Amino acid sequence: MKQFKTIEFTIEDKIGTIMLNRPEIHNAFNEVMIGEIIDCFEEIEKMNYDIIRVVLMKGKGKSFCAGADLKWMKGVANYSYQENYLESYKLSMCFNAVYSCKFPTIAVVHGAAIGGANGLLAACDFVLAHKNTVFSLSEVKIGIVPACISPYVMKRVGEYKSKELMLTGMRLDGKEAQKAGLVNWSYRDKKLNAKLEDLISKLKSSGPIAVSTCKQLLYDVENVWNHEEAMENTAKMIAELRQSDEGQEGMNSFLEKRKPNWLIEN
Image (cartoon, rainbow, N blue to C red; front, side, top):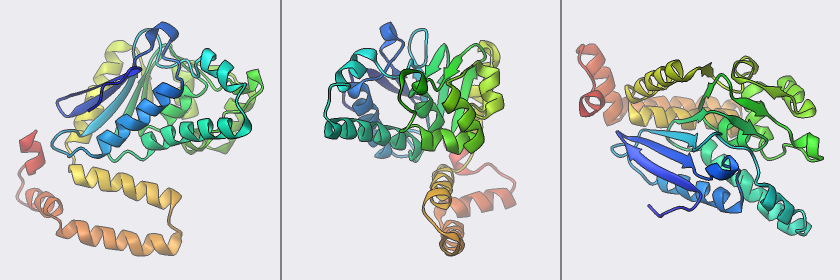
């Protein structure tokens, strides 16, 4: 994989970790980081299940991400409409790359998650946050709106909670963000780490192709298929999986009261 300037990517025990790496400015993102996150997920999509099973997203230093880099924002303020559109569409592509990843994704959030940072975490499948993390969808405070992140935030928290968060720009701590649905779990360090280990263990104990296929199923039901297409395509999917090598192994291991081969391999 290529070397990055604003993020780091490592793989250990089949866990891929994307580390936002601009700690001196609380991992605020600019056009370089946006492009590198897209490139990183494109590389991850090419990887096999024997290399990676879960993707973590974290931030180096004191914060997960403080939103957009102020220097970058100052520059784009002078862009033409077309230049602003292209830059903004790339941000949308970044969030979608996270959202559509074939592997389970987990954001581990600490310090602060401001503005567009909430698009990164909301696009992940799971979010764990330190209870003292500060969250804010603060765009309206500077005269803009949380446009590109809105599809992912609204999927997480729903329309009316999105109104509360986006129209006011209110600040929340980790527990309040959990109550709002923006994060799944919020704890202090020790319990947070234990929960992360438990979640990863649960994800790795399931059939890797089944997990990936289930992610695609959820994506298609929510975003692609109408009701009739869902009826037909879900029936096809389960028929194909029952005949697949992994499906046969899973069903046989259950009936034979033994571990499936993907647990033995791990």
